[in-house]
Image 1: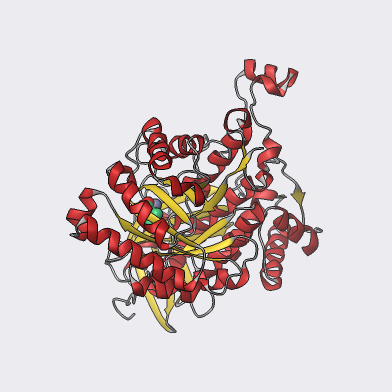
Image 2: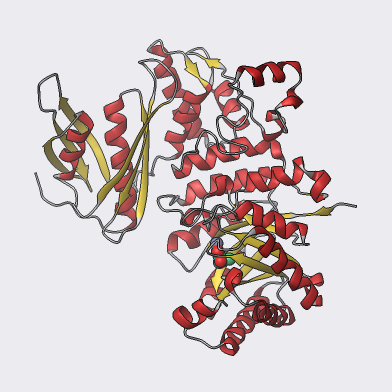
Length: 514
Ligand code: KIV
Ligand code: ZN
């Protein structure tokens, strides 16, 4: 009989560590609910000690999301483990995941601890976690660069202390597939008790090997894979969930394993994560990229028309890619719009559905034909809106003047914590002028790092989708996003959305009064 491979999703923890991917608590809940629909076995919902926001997100997901095990991360320290338990204890199936670095370089340079001390910390942490819950995972961080002998010693000790899952991370994405698979093989050969626990792997993509390394480990007996939707994560990211799952499914003849994933939910989960994090996919991204199932070359098109199997190894429908573009107009009701959004994996409150419907009708009234992508963009805009309390900066109005042979100029009126501020600026173009006007009012230590403009559908009346990245004085990246039929308004609203996120996280101060 085929074995089952557990899919441990860490999009909300390691994935959220991607620069600029920071998500609000609400956004994390929306993603977690979709992950549950997708059928992941474990959701790593966050790192509760890291911030109050992380704690709240893990706690809310533990309270709300049903189905998967809800896991929180904790360093091998009492305070971390206690805080982690406070957040995950609400889940029907809670897990504490604790870790400590084991490679020589991390032990010597980062921890300044001997091998024996590191083992003592690991054992103590597992025992403390175990005093709270049965399901305890342990990771020897940077296992990929840890001597095999010492890695086995650590694993033996933590299994004895009660760990039920042992995760072998290639933290810096250094290993090659055969080597990483070999590491798992050696672990099973040298630590017989590893047969009684779940052996997991967690691979980073610095050399582009994350998926291949994870699959090599499955081939050697690993039964849990840690991965992220769209392969997001620290630096070059983590192993991509959709690629792992579709490898295991498409090449069942080779791996002979199953997963609990409903692959038809992959495409919509990918879009949801991409929209909420502002981390867009390249068109040729495997499985979920826009071109993943497109055939351009005539010879390929001809072959596919004769028989799909000539050039397609998977069915687009199996990953939930429908490719349709339904047309919704001003006569479409809330039900049609909500049904479409539900089908795409968006769970909206009644108020949010009303807002989306209202905006869709407003656009349709302007004689625009509305396509599926317009509705999804509007829904993302509504979902990404901050609560009234979080909107400390509000756009009161703006004027932009531009023309051939003129220097674009702009003035803007903002309400910051209820106080009216006016700024004026010039720039290379209208959006640059408006952004400069905003920065005459805002703390200059916050920098605009990235500005991306996308037209949702074709035509001069296309909705403009603007996503931006800001860097605060501490180097932390925040994203902002807005959708509007007016490209300039979408730009300034995206900047304000991002500034509010910075302001909520720190105490962004206004520079001067008008
Ligand atoms: O990459 C890593 O080592 C991690 C651990 C915390 C598992 O993310
Ligand atoms: Zn990691």
